[in-house]
Image 1 (tube, rainbow, N blue to C red):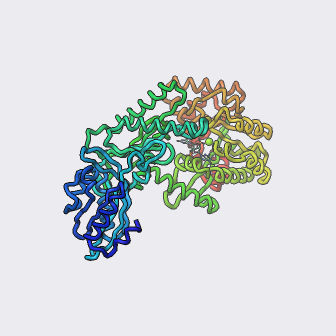
Image 2: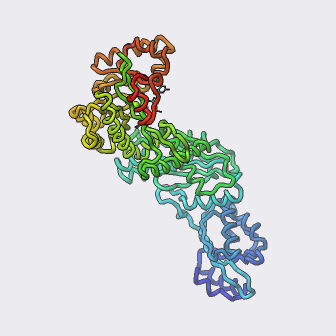
Image 3: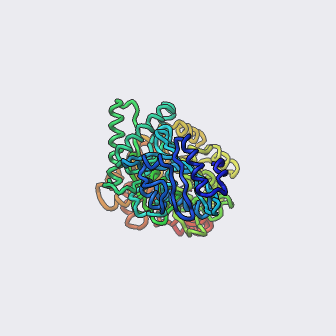
Length: 562
Ligand code: C2E
Ligand code: MG
Ligand code: MG
């Protein structure tokens, strides 16, 4: 609009006549808003199409409220305020007017602030109808994130209580569609889903397309309000119907994250962040579902993020705060010490002593379990070498995570460790749980084969908590099966479970593996479980996990204490 600079210093009357001339050769509607007196002037043609009472009107707020779509008014007012205060001197917005028949007309409004001869600040500009080419996403025809931010910012500032809900919708397997069927199919799916969403919501509800495969619905309408659950169910149903009509040539599901009635004091940025978190929550919970934002869950998530930061710091500071504890494993025949399980501890400055059940999953999900697991392996191997001077056949059990197996060269690490520490391979038992096993992963079979070649034993940990799959047991040829404490507790409580555990132990024995019973806490438990015929026992009854020096003092230097 720099050409309007020629208007600088002209009287209001001069300016009006210049723009009347300009008006004749333009499809746009020209306007002047006197920011000092609040008088709004608009070309005559505009008064025919839109509900302006005159070409010169006092109280621009009142005038514009009649013409501007109610959802867009706050955004426009805020922009004009910035022009009036001198914070900005151009105005460029795309928004909606309502014509004399109350139909929505998308307009593009551009203006410049000039100072008239009277010293008044005047916003001079033109409004053009955008027709069908509203600034929208080319694929879905919806407005985009940038526009959502403006709309949401205005609503959040001026009437946050009018927002009923904001829902973020995403396709569960969009990447797969794009990769398998190409970008064109992806676009088609986006178009289809946009249609399903628009059909599911009232026409006064705003729908935007965010990046990639995500959409955002903002309901601040005063219309009969559909509950977000209803809207989501309808979207799901329409998506399923579309798939059926297309004879399932392409199938996808959608998830949603919703925020309801909790908008006061929030920013658009925050809403985008929280709805993204909630949508991901729905996907994490198994996809094809809707999740509702919950402050507690979000705080928990933030705590995890912070913990991850602390864990990373600890790893980078030579594993400061990590300590490997050892718990005795005894032979069931004479209760003599045969080995120990290495159990990692984390003493955090910020969080105190954090249980492994909390920090191990964070280490896994961040990949930090790879360096930390390596650290545990070396520590445990070194300690084992020393303890073998007390008990030559001593072995140390080290827990492994599948992440180490799938994403690092574990075998090489184990090899290097055995070589450099200088222990026999049969001093090391690697513990793996059943739950992370992926049958189709070729790497895992190779890993088991090579371990066997190198004569390194495997223990199948936490048996009884998952599927207790005998086939898996046979496949990995575990030397030992560790029966989980939860299984032991059940067996102590009822005869049925007791009999199952006895049979499982028989079966394990018949496959050639030995059994270590975990979590034996008291004498009575021990006596009863001994009848099931385990080979090794581990539990508080024989000793709690303790630091290496204490373990050595308690169980190796004075060996009668067991
Ligand atoms: P796990 O490998 O099954 O270890 C046995 C768990 O049972 C340990 O819990 C141990 O303290 C506990 N326990 C032993 N005896 C008794 C008992 O008599 N009663 C009760 N109530 N509990 C007993 P902890 O140390 O909290 O470790 C939990 C899990 O964290 C471990 O289960 C293991 O899966 C994982 N973990 C620990 N250290 C490491 C590690 O270095 N690497 C990996 N990947 N995982 C680890
Ligand atoms: Mg274990
Ligand atoms: Mg276990």
